[in-house]
Structure formats: C-alpha cells, structure tokens
Image 1 (cartoon, rainbow, N blue to C red):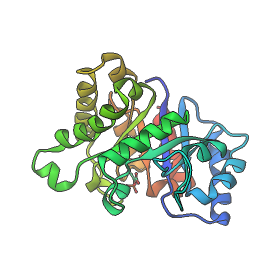
Image 2 (cartoon, helix red, strand yellow; image 1 turned 180 degrees about the horizontal axis):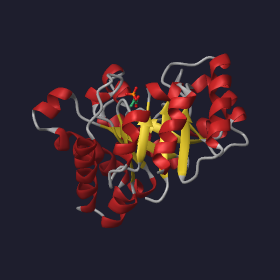
Image 3 (tube, rainbow, N blue to C red; image 1 turned 90 degrees about the vertical axis):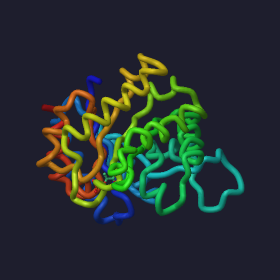
Length: 251
Ligand code: PEP
C-alpha cells in the first residue's frame, strides 16, 4: 500500500458545537499532511454538517453504521445510498461494539458489506478476537472466520477495494494496545489467509490496526510492514492527538 490511512471513529460523541471546533482544527492541521488519507466517522445525524465543514479539505467522510437493506419499510435505518448522498466515502461494518452490543452476526455484517459495495462506497470491515479467544489461541480462526463470512457472500475479489481493520476487542477503548509484533503477526496472517484465495487481493487490501492507538504508539505500529494505517476511537476526538497520529503515518 502506498497511501496510509488514519480513520477516526467518533462513536456516539458529538454535538454541532464540538463538531465545528474539532473538524475546523482537523482541516487546518491536515492541510500539510501528505501520503496519508485521513477519514472521520461522525454519528449519522451530523454527516451533513461535517460534510460541509470538510468541503475544501482532503479529509474523507465516513459513517459508523449502515442498513443491510436498500430502501423501504425499515424504520430507523439508514441506507448506503443515503450515506452516499451526504458525501460519505467509507462505512464501518462489523465494529466490535455493533457485534457485541447490538447482536450483529457475521451474516448481517456480510450483508452490510455487500450493501456498502453495491452503493459504490468503501467498507471498512472490522474484525478481531476477544481476550478469551486470544488466550485460547483462537485469534486466527476468529479473524479468518469473520473474513470468510464476507467472502462467502460477495467473493474474495471485493476485498481488493475494501479496507479491513484488525481490532482486537480487548484493546478497544481499554488503553491496552496490541504490541507492534502482536499486531503485525495478525496482519501478516490475514494477508496470508487471503493469499490462499487470491494473491493479488492479499497484496492490495488495506489493513488498518485499531485498539487504543495514540500518538505515542502509532509510530511503531505504522512501521510494521503489513500495517497500512490505523482506526482510532478515543484519540480521534482530540484534534491534536489525531493529527499527531496522521503525522506518524507519514513517516
Ligand atoms: C475503535 O472504536 O475502533 C477504537 C479502536 O477505539 P479506541 O481507539 O478508543 O480503542
């Protein structure tokens, strides 16, 4: 991968006031960044606001969730084409909070991935093991299984133009970060798994690491050969911290 990506998942933290301050600071600070694609994922009601704030910037807009359905009688749902209408380019699917708190199965995640692709947007497919699964040495079975559920529905070729985010569940929002070696080991294994099905896809797919990434840990993580950037939660709410992670991705 030539261009690294640093993606900020704001989760359910936003207001029109804080969005303005945060986005304006990001736009100003990101103007000097090169060779790194910055992306922000605000909560859905604010996509229009953040789209306008990002208008003259290279920072891309992302959404945190999407319906697996195209349109119709699905109260409360937001379709991929609606997201596209607001200038969204990237969509998180299968974030561990969606999987664990909202019961999203591998099948639902795969259907959402397909809906995002069908609308011409780029899914950021989140995969990762719990602490118990890591301790049971099941990490690779878990992440490969999560990947395979998507491949079974859409075919491996669709992964070439998607983003995968490896996010160990035990590292999300906990302050615990996988060591660069632990992260690299899984990223390499993900690429090797994909290579058994399509070598070109394995090479092209962009694989981000997520899990308590901050300015202090980003440099070493991003220096790993199979890590193509980061998906950042908590630190993405602080403009200077998020920009510092963007700078780490450049070097
Ligand atoms: C995330 O929500 O995807 C994430 C990685 O969060 P944090 O950086 O806060 O661990």
